[in-house]
Amino acid sequence: MTSEIPQEERDREIGIKPDELLGLFQISSQIHHGINGWLNPPSGATPKSGIELCDNLIAQLPKLSSGLTALRDRIQEIWDRAGFDYKIIDSKIPRDQIRVKCGELLSLAQMRAQISTELNQWVHPERIVPKEGKDKLGHLLDRMDIFTQTLKSIQATLEEIEERNLGESTE
Image (cartoon, rainbow, N blue to C red; front, side, top):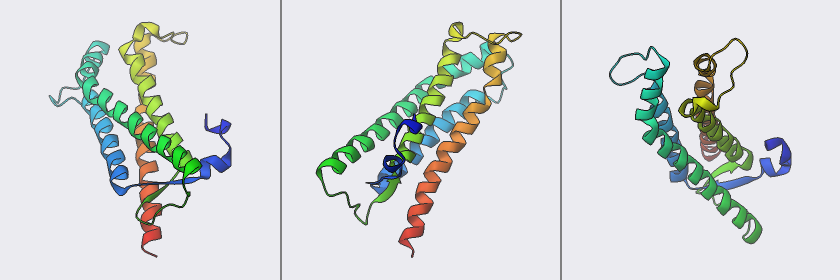
């Protein structure tokens, strides 16, 4: 998806309020805690079967769903405002705002979609066509690292935005 967008547009910076960046961190944390609660339930009992994993996911779905929806909505709100501001208003970013590259917003949106897609496979395993020699549970378990990698990438992107802006403000 990002390869279809010109590099100039991905590098274009937009401004967000500091509390919007804080909100993105909080939403990311909510998603992380939801996935952690799914894989490491508060009861301390490690899920041992596909049914237990699915039951734990169902228990965490409200938290995960609201977090994923909030992230989608927040990204869309920032994106819509940035597109409007870019076309209509002077594109200078006020000093009290956080500079975010459009490419970073797109990456966050893609990572959010990746988590949503992976969760959807767990919720609807009947739609999975596993590779030869694998059953559906084996297919799903093989993809568990995607959650960890994607959550780390979301966190790293947000931290990069924060670090880039804090570094600029202290100079």
